[in-house]
Amino acid sequence: MNFSGSSRPLILVHRAMKTVTGIEGRVDVMVTPQFYTVKREALHIRFAHQAQKIAPSLFDGLLEDPANHDYFVYREDETWVFIAYDPKEIAAFLESRGIAPQQVAKLFFAQQAKAHFTAPVALGEREALVLIDQTVTVVPRAVLHKQQWRTFDETFRPGKGVSLGVAETSLLTRKQALSLAAILFLFGIIWLSEGWRYGRTNTALQTKLETYYATYPSLQSAYTRDSIAAKYRKIDKIERKKRQVVGKIAGMLFKGVTLKSFEMDEKRFHAVFEAVDAKTLKRLEALAKASGIVQKQRKTGTTMTIEGKV
Amino acid sequence: MIWQRYRNELIVAAALLFALSAFFYKHAKRAEMAQSNQQMAKEFALLKETVSLKKIWGNKQIGKKVDALKNLVNPSKMVWQKKGRKLHMTLHDLTASEVNRVVTRILNIPVQVQKLKSEKTGNTYSMEIVCKW
Image (cartoon, rainbow over all chains, first blue to last red; front, side, top):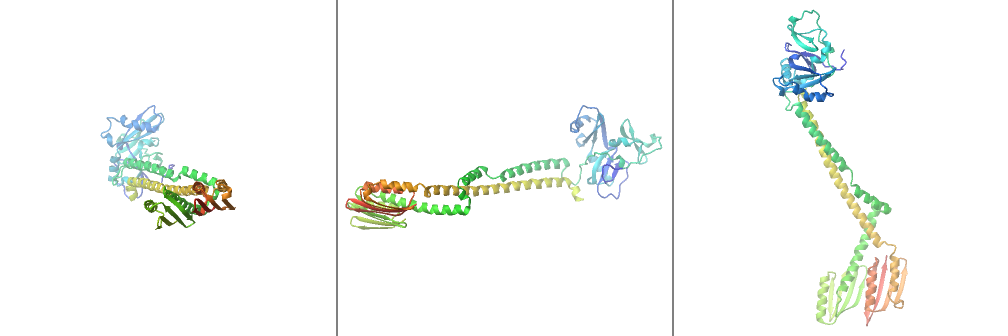
């Protein structure tokens, strides 16, 4: 019975296996000890990730090429089981037997299913898998005298497996891909949070605006606000101009000059000055020109009249 | 089963897509915020200007300030006509310093000057002022 819920076929992979044909879709494989090295240690370690960290040091001197090996660790009662395997070697072998590495969904190790080796499992005509001293081992069939054999089936499927992590056509290894993806993901999260922060409006300005609107509720409507602003802006502009004109006229009065008359309405102004002599009048003329408010200017004797717009 | 063959690249591509989307999201939000802040700053400036203009030209104390003009010169030299928010003031026999005082004071009050007339006759001045607020 398959309790794992997987619908993928489980294939037992051993050196003497023949080429597999007619496989479509993904498969799970279980490899024999021919493809891995196993060690069992009673260590005071609580978590699997801690055991995974020390795994390479346990196989020091045992493996031919440790750099190419990956490690699978699981707990078995009071001991930790460490399995060292070469994914590339397994992938190459699978390929030689007609199974593309990318077809492999999960990789299991025969050691994981030791409880099911109640009887030897035949591996071709010459070898068999048996449980010796709690370790699943490959032995020549010749040494076995038992006539009872166990058939390899779905019941051997362990709960936990590993991904083969090798795809020959892939430009990146699984490790590289995951590292790169993690970095990109991290950047993505940072940018998302920055974006979220930008999404919030400037609260200081918002508060100021709200305070103003609370004090002047009539200005909340944009239409009213614009209309009031336009009205007072126009008044402000004209009245400032009028006061500027009076200021400039006052600036033209100096010793020897008298303002005979001055008149200013909403649109225009008119002023008549009397100078004591021609020299004073000339100076007055220069002042009038420099004031920038005079549009018309005329002289009669020592009298000067100026006109302009407000 | 190409996707299985290039599974690693697909993982990286998905992460890249996520990162790029987040990057563009951030930039879009930043632009949105800048625009919103600009809009708010503009609105705030207009509001401030409107309030200050209203405080100057729409002040309810202007009437009282205008009334104070009555005391600037001797009442015998003045004809005072005030109707609502409009003042028509005629002055005669003023000295130059009195003219100065009246003009300076009236121009310092935020009223709309509709007419300001001054004429010298002999050694004295006559004036006519019409304003509203």
